Length: 369
Image 1 (cartoon, one colour):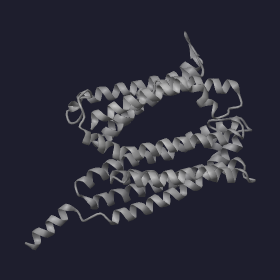
Image 2 (cartoon, rainbow, N blue to C red; image 1 turned 45 degrees about the horizontal axis):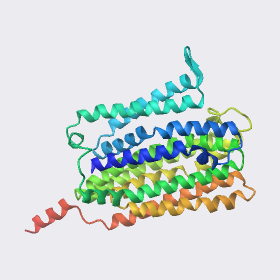
Image 3 (tube, rainbow, N blue to C red; image 1 turned 180 degrees about the horizontal axis):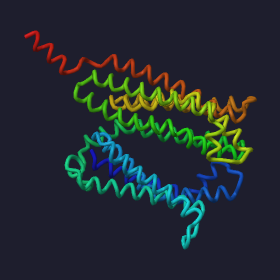
Image 4 (cartoon, rainbow, N blue to C red; image 1 turned 90 degrees about the horizontal axis):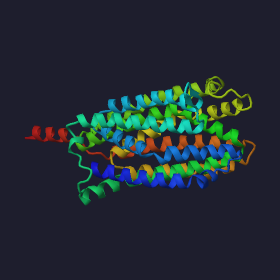
């Protein structure tokens, strides 16, 4: 199945790159940005980062494979190198240093692509040393149709889920632009600050996905439950910590990134409202990983799509009240709370239907003899 993953990755990266490069103007135009220079810079950034998105695709594919193999250290090292490089290249290419002339937004985009390319190079070096899985991958060899069907059956619901989620995010961003370009800046910066919780939860979700999938396949159903509840406990504490942090110190945190006095109050309200749902969002993302490891990707897609889609009418209703822009933030928070609760209850229901451990059944049979 690995050659198929790489083939599909190349294909989708190529198609997506072509569409975003040649369709940058209408795509950015959808958001209705008020400042022409901002819209132009957004097009430049989109053409560079998405036109060369192949590196990002490959990094995601390889990260997933290595994590499933139980190797999370290599992806961590590779992405850490890319992150540090991006931090170094950003100011150099944006503002310029010595003989290097700054290119503004284009420089930020180039720095991102270069960092992603370095991450890919690190992965390729690691792959060359692997003698367990990657040395057997022949990308040009024919892939059996049974493997293709299994991959599509498992991956298609999650892919559609992410596609719909992104589309919903675009629509909601369009709503935000109705409150001005400053509101969009608050959304972008606030989302980056908020990522301290959801990126951690996403990493735990990937880890528990691998753990649950391996133990489920081995018939170690007790370990599936124990691993999940251990991960949920850790993520609940982390989410609670992030909630307290965002709700208690919103002005200090947002002020680290934006200093304009007219923007900070909007950013403070964003962090306080979204801070309410952090623990539930952590539970959601971790449980998605666990349920996907049990092969319940369709269930995850249904819950995510339905309640993420509900953000659109909820945002329309709440933003038309005295809440205004804050109504959109509350739509985000309320839907995340509901999804976190539903995903946790779903895992409880699914886990109760798991049979006894294979080794326990075998032991009981031997004792009876």
